[in-house]
Image (cartoon, rainbow, N blue to C red; front, side):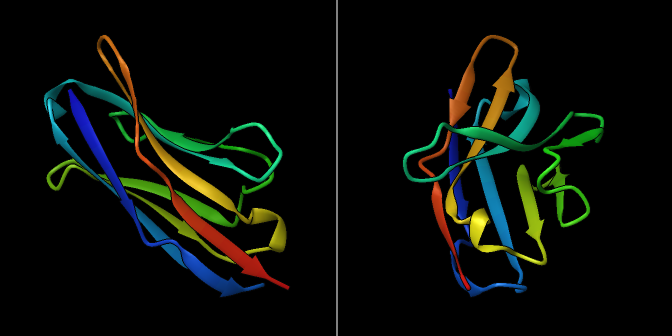
Length: 115
């Protein structure tokens, strides 16, 4: 089992920045890929970015050049630095990890960007 706790969400004006964190605990030795997803009201959950155990990252086109995903394996924590935020980035952001056998989700953290 892996437990995930997100933090760092909040309310920010357009053009501002936020940094999300996802702390993992439990069977962390089995974690492979980690990622961030988001879900806006009335929309499906979508991938924001993910990062492999070796540090290779991929981003959704909508966040490229604005968001940066990173992970600190020593601290079992993943981050999402979000810059130049737009109102359309408003959503609940979820932490996700893939292990050898399962996928786990955090409960999510709300990000609201005002215009």
